[in-house]
Length: 310
Ligand SMILES: C[S@@+](CC[C@H](N)C(=O)[O-])C[C@H]1O[C@@H](n2cnc3c(N)ncnc32)[C@H](O)[C@@H]1O
Image 1 (spheres, rainbow, N blue to C red):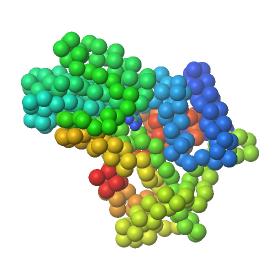
Image 2: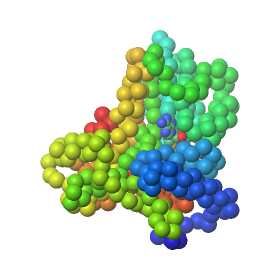
Image 3: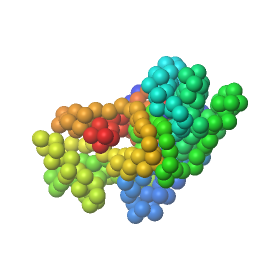
Image 4: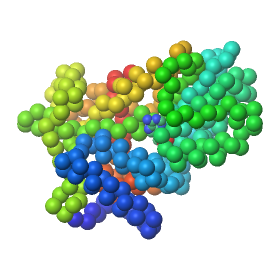
């Protein structure tokens, strides 16, 4: 089956087609190893982070006008300037900053310079970045900082178990965490995962929800006030809670600032939002077919329920 995009798609070059074909092979092998089906969060793990092939791991521009989407730090230095001004009192007398998922390094560049101008340059500015490609770009960009600021930078391979004093911040990282997809069926909750059809093409397939997802969905449904209608489809990120738990454990004293898009729970799971919020972004266009040219799109469910984030 050939998938036809329902929007005007910029032409793909040979390298992009080859990258996507190689990732498709890795995904098909994983689906076969999973007995013919994998949950959507596992699909996203590979789609976004497969070494050398996933969206964040391969060499595409990703951020900014030449990429697929834009973030506040990419637009101007105002975002970093506001954070610096707000957080300066916290860093008086010493402290550290840990930025998660620092993208192109734009926020780190502004924040370090602004904090220094306010007389509160952090003792260290740590960056934890899952993408080797972006980490390299951050190192290149931040290499042009003056030596007295550059010497404060450290890239981490994992989250510290504790001991941080100061500020942990992440802009648009929570929405990069892989999430699960579900449907409401006549038999209860189903998990929407990925399977191969007779032609070897990837597509949606449902299974009864596993115990952990089923329990979370039952908890969610009990708080909504009205039942989710039959055939309702949406997403749930079970990883966000443990992720925030790990961040707060890393912080001995200070602030955790997470910036992201979000809706209140009742808006996100409104009975009329029957097809969920999953969107795929490519060159500032959006579509909703996560199986089209895997690895070239950033795919995410835009909002995370704010109650889950809190
Ligand atoms: C949407 S981009 C945002 C980049 C940047 N913060 C900005 O605002 O421009 C998401 C970033 O998070 C990184 N990332 C995704 N999951 C992560 C995780 N679990 N820990 C740290 N970084 C992560 C990605 O590689 C990427 O740098």
